[in-house]
Length: 316
Ligand SMILES: [Zn+2]
Image (tube, rainbow, N blue to C red):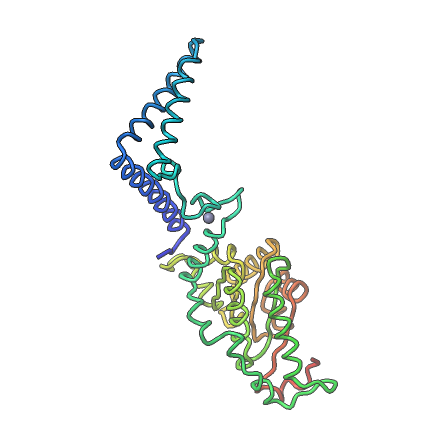
């Protein structure tokens, strides 16, 4: 199981070893059945060596080249007569795009991204949630229970528009990374919606880290025995930080929260944060740069539920 980047590296080493062994096996099998071909291949190598040496010593090479031509033509005839495809001396790769290195022109190959998605899922176990939390399971009648209306638009209609936006944000996240703050009291479905977006991102082959704020901060403490999530939170395509505001706030936690928000904005990577804190509470609890980023650089979306009466005065 892939549990770290070291494991991915090791896996590519195994793949490359496998490529080589398969290539050796195939070549040996062909040579065993065709000793003549082995002899011809060996003679070709010997002639190349002789030509190389002659060049260095400034000696004539015409005779060697002629011999080489003859052997090559003999070999071609042999291959044809015995129906052997002339690629048994080439290495075959599992992934032709990156030749099993994981990178193409300095960029992650799609096969590497697949392994990364697996790694991130093994770290945050996000796939456990998406069986039940995905847009297919969304029941819009959930948003009907309130009698909330704004300028003749029902809350359900507002949510329909919002959810359409959420889907298109994930759809376009490669080109337009998004930063979303879902604000609302417990029971309004913000975690559910964040996970639905994460599920959509996985469908698009994006790597997702989903984590509750307490679990995230806990993973950064020195005595935590698992894998610290900070690196993965920086590296993933979509980072979902759930329940901001439920943690015990200290200078240390505030610095860490500020770091990840800042880092992902600078790296132009998509992030969803859910919170039950209103902006004024965010302002009083967090660093001023955290507040300013969450309010100015994030899309702020408010969700309303059972607590509607209390929130009815809020302008939506
Ligand atoms: Zn590849």
